[in-house]
Image (tube, rainbow, N blue to C red; front, side, top):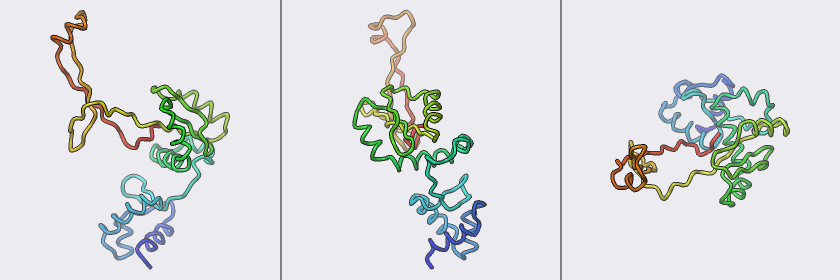
Length: 199
């Protein structure tokens, strides 16, 4: 039996309680580092998931659109992110097709379909989202187009690069010409969060 099957067997045994990488390694007689590395590979493959940083469980391939609304509303933030990522995977082709229209900035997916498109960069109103869920009787997920800021200058910060906008600051009674001539330069760094699914 390979390491993958051994890990699955152990996680099946502990069920929803989960186990840490150290516990799994001890039980299987393996090095913790090897088990931990392998768990992260299995997570990327969608076969296991972690609660918090250290507690591992088998990934249950839940259909993100068939969760009862009451249970959906009670999901933790991490569980919600996991469901939103799964919803994106299930609708990826339809979402990408919708985003071919450059004016669309956000979509709502429900029951495997794109049910709403928004051309406003401001996002989708929470009341509208709740109305859609009530009407459909199923969870809905907002997926946003990644912001494009390629024309902006990029600044290095902590071993990564972020888009940067240069601002000119001046007195509140200054004219535009005076701000351009004598204004003080300032930089604003935009730090983008990952994943790119905006919820």
